[in-house]
Image 1 (cartoon, rainbow, N blue to C red):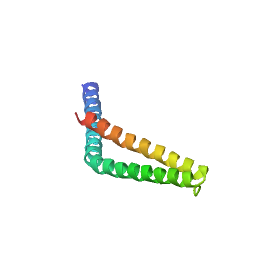
Image 2 (cartoon, one colour):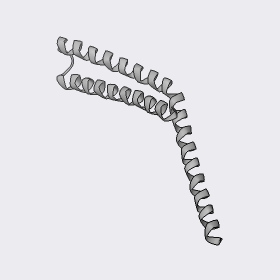
Image 3 (cartoon, rainbow, N blue to C red):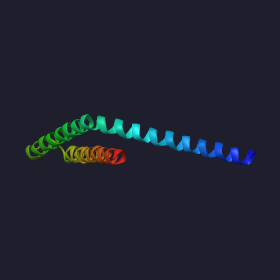
Image 4 (cartoon, rainbow, N blue to C red):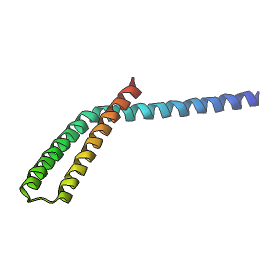
Length: 100
């Protein structure tokens, strides 16, 4: 009888742990999903700024005002911005699928 009560208590504790874990994941996914539009907008603006900066660097390089190193740094920053934007979109999709 004591063994059965102990097993019952252990299984209830495991169930409670799983429930809390699931609840925590759902809350995190919901918060990610609700903050994603603002995050996406910010990354879109960052990408636009990086593209404009790169375009300005290209024009400056053609005029001889900017060095190739500066142009390559602008290209690198643009590439980073695209990666950040992709990560933000992926995070939204992952949060949405977790909630679904």
